[in-house]
View (cartoon, rainbow, N blue to C red):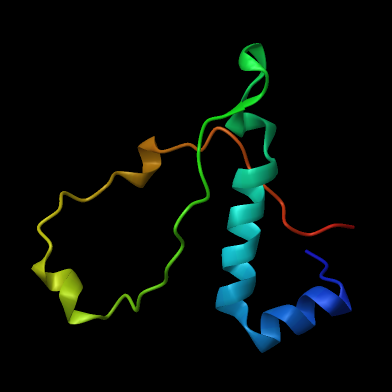
Length: 83
């Protein structure tokens, strides 16, 4: 994957903010977030994006069933890098 100098700088300066902005942009601009038969109605509002340390003790308090990742296949892949 090739990143432009501008993208590299944004990642270096504030990677969390950059990733948050990219996620929000995908949701805002994706045609998969529109219902074409309803005048391009937007299905999902702007997402809340936050980050947490995977070693945070709060996660030991959650009792969740493990997800079988081999069953999960995202329907679409997104690319944030423009060539």
